[in-house]
Image (cartoon, rainbow, N blue to C red; front, side):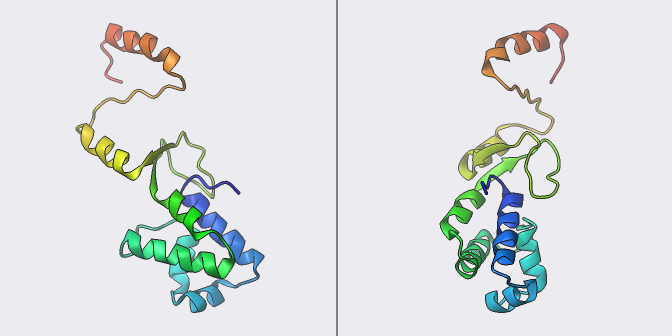
Length: 140
């Protein structure tokens, strides 16, 4: 399985746990977490945890228990995905942009609220699209 976003990390954790025939309750006991916390990890819902340091530690513990590569989980986690829509299930197929955390922070602070954003599938179309916007007075 190729992981590219938070939902993929969660799905990978769940699949590896199930492949090892470890119940959610047994995983929680072994990891010294609540069942709710293990379920949150498997659902890619990391914002409810105290900090990224804790989440990374849980990834390492899960990886050890499930026979996974903890470093790979952390590499995926340490990137930010900006979505054009909600992520549903274990897939990120909504035009995600994968940005390293430092770049994402700069991007976040770069513009004010309501700054227009132009999204293209190819830079070859950039000039034509910018001319269209300038010609119509549209803001994005």
